[in-house]
Image 1 (cartoon, rainbow, N blue to C red):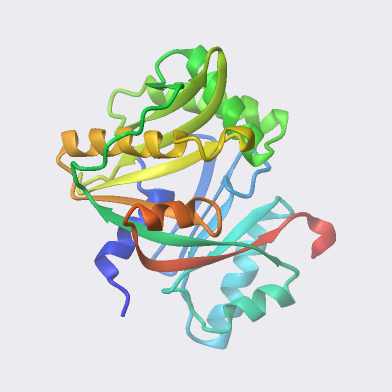
Image 2: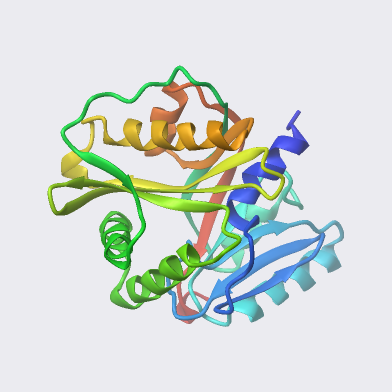
Length: 265
């Protein structure tokens, strides 16, 4: 049976922020959690994170509400172990959504014996606007973000660093002047968990210890904060196998579906 308390932190990776930016419009209720980001066409910035409906009438009404909310804007729908009804995937396919990916909710108790491997790259905390640009550049190359999304992310990330009550930050891995890896982190509102808020390494730099070093740096920061767990949503066959080898345990998984444009309706 799913650990409801720990799954709360898995979902918190998406939504447990210090504040919601003005560029984000959202609906947050017991039966529905969804949000969309102005200026971004990335389905990772526009998500249905929770959907719980029982009767046929409730399901139909909520489905219509979601599609009206996005109104042709690309978005992703994350079906988790607490999603209802059980036929939700079939209903989404009928509405023109297509399967995109699987993400696993993984958790690791904080420990102090995960040591960084010596690597010929510098891993540092993001502090300046130039650092933010490096962070966005490498993440955009990994995920294929367009220029509009990159511009939005630079403003958003730098604005976050200037926020007094921020609970997280960013790391970059550099090869000389070239950004080759990135990682984000954020602490839960109660401080119990550190969320791994995105990690990536350029393909040509993978399997060289960069991912491991970005993780151990964050584990060090989590221990300093007094947190008990590191929590993440790990993409299938991407970061997921690496994290399992490092001791992360699965709490549940998300099946991710996407809607790209009005032509798919």
